[in-house]
Image (cartoon, rainbow, N blue to C red):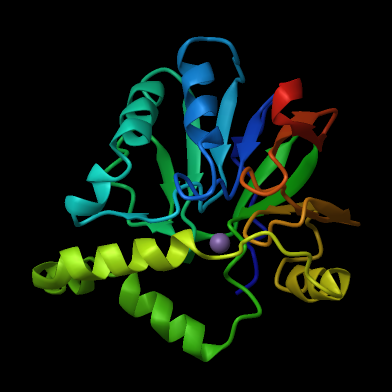
Length: 239
Ligand SMILES: [Mn+2]
């Protein structure tokens, strides 16, 4: 699917904060700390972009999984009353619209979404949409369905505990070989009028031409901050 050429309606503001792939709580508590700093006014961005997989496992249509993330969920729900928040669902956190009624949530199917930074057209997505093959497509459609999740409810304790154990042990911070070549292929899914593509998912914290792979909060301990119609990678301690 190519990103549409329609005029962008949504603007990304100077100072907007991009947070991706925190994989909370299994790979550090930085996401929770960051939400607390937003809550107490230590950090005051004009907008917050959650680019996916900030929760290591969270989905709607189920109560049990929310109990593992209740602190961060409550903070986000509170923040969303007074801060403009956009959330791009990832492959670890999805079906989030009901959990966060005041956040602008974009499902995988709605991504990429075209925003504007000044005069630039910017495509935003979590990053798990392109270059993955039919098996992943099928898996993702089955798993990200409220009906599937409700049907599996009798097994929820076993499935969730097993998933959490597996995710906790996962090595998520790896440098991808030949990543630049992959970004060329990803960019082919966007129309040529796009000036910039910002994605998470790959945890690379690298820029190749129009393509920006955001830092992972878990791996690089950094976020993206919009400055001068571009995006800078800023270490957490420098925020
Ligand atoms: Mn991901």
